[in-house]
Amino acid sequence: MTSDGAQSTAPFDVDDVQGAVVPGFKTGQQQFLVVKIDEPHAARPVLSELADRVTKCSDVQKFRDQDQQARARAGPWLSVALSRTGLERLGIEGFGTPEQRQSFENGIEHATGPMQGRLPADESHMLFSIAADDPGVLIEAGNDLVALLSPQGMTVTAQYDGSAIISDGHTREHFGFRDGIAQPGVEGITDRQQNGLRRRTDAVPADRFVIGAGADGVNVGLGHHGSYMVFAKIEQLVDRFEEFCAESALRINVDWGRDDVTPEAAAALIIGRYRDGTRVDLRTFPEKPEVVGGDLDDFTYDGDPYGRVCPLGAHVRKTNPRTNQVGAAHRILRRGIPYESDGEKGLMFVCYQASIATGFQYIHERWANSLISSAETRLDRPLDDRVDRGESINELNYVLFGRKAHVLLIDAPPDPLIGLPGRAGTASYEVPRPDGRGGSTGLPLFNDWVRYRTGDYFFTPSVSTLRQWGGG
Image (cartoon, rainbow, N blue to C red; front, side, top):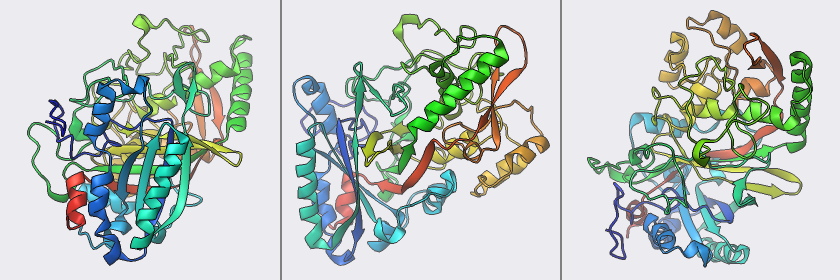
């Protein structure tokens, strides 16, 4: 039951899970405050008060069930998360499985590679997420939070602001692509509560995102009903991306002996979708395929193992292989929002999962930065061993490694947006020629249009755990 007496079908306590995790805030404005704990003894009791202030899953459910979104503005809503060093600063002992702890302790650069300005460990103990539709309400809520924290030995060391981009009634990111189409549904949470989410498949089990969720879920201690959070500021260099797409269109037209491939169509090849969300299909390219029933997410790659319909290296394919073999094992809940500040554009990336090792880290290391198709889950044994030992694989020479691999080699380059070799200019993005002509056109990946600027891993505790940590 929820706090207002309404029946819940969620396989977890909706009054205990933070609403930023499930069903997600998805407001027009968000503010992220990075906080340093100067005085641990003064700061720890504040966690009890924060437990009373955080927005619960049930709060967001109630708002959306009453259809207030159509006549009222959401927020202010609050979420609280702590970094590894923040937990240590407060004297909170380690929790979770060894796999969860290892990934959390390794930090975000283990998956993304070096960042230009990773959040300093000694200045990023906590991360507060504030969400609202009204910018004025957001600012006021942020000021109220700072007024609470400052006298208790906490200092804001960084602030990041995001604002949703709405075009034609849909959210988009700075490259112009419709966003959130393939967001997984969460077991027990209605589509309305997830802000009108449409999905082509059954909901993903909640225990992929919320620790201890499920009908057979047992209380796992301090981690129960919590979720691991990945936070990153990702800059998008729009002009450079557009230039690359224009050059790619010219290269494809010359190689294919045609003149109808536009920069927009070339961009769709890189992403795997057109800007309106329609999937790429090389059998109709550069024309869009028919969307059956208007469902942009009703397709898989099961019948396309060699990338003759969608290039194996396409971003949406590398990060979500859509095969029955892989299923929902490595899904994450993306909760990011675009930002624009001082001429810089990008994404405040946020995602939640019950395990970073099987979520964000797996997607980056085994899919985005692998030379083989993400549909091919069988990797070369030495690579498998390195991942299993928790070692980074990002420094491997992928060109040489590819020649030594003992698997069926399918030319699937690293992800063109977040793949490290792509950013280093060492990979070629292969687009199969259509019409059964054989061969492919190679596009050199000198990816300098996406940059991880800063970020880290955090843990988003349950409301009850937050209160327990505060001594309440």
